Amino acid sequence: MSHSDDRHLPEDSMQIGAGSVGNGKPSRPMSPKIKSVTIGPMPKGLMDPMPSVTAKFEDGTERKLFHFYPDELKFQESEFLGLTESEAHALRHSKDMAYLKSP
Image 1: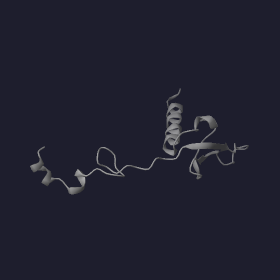
Image 2: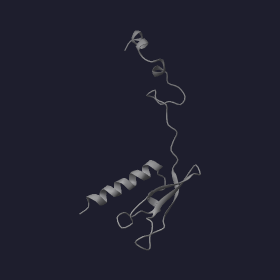
Image 3: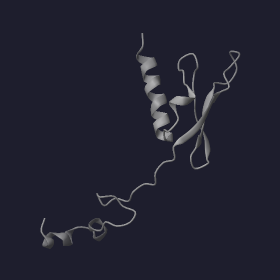
């Protein structure tokens, strides 16, 4: 595209600066990584609530990520260390899909 064609593009599409990546789009802040995880409590009876995975992040926040059925999925704290929240959800999804596809 020649400079004469640049007049047809929105002005902000041609500028790349702080807060953007090489494609001209604003960059997203880095997602904090998980530094510790609590899994549980495990149910003792049929009517007990399902266990949850709660993560503490590098930025000091703590969030409950999800609940799961312990007779279907198994997790270890070490699997989550260093992951972002979205990567932790992807881990749960992949284990869930593997369980559903198993005979």
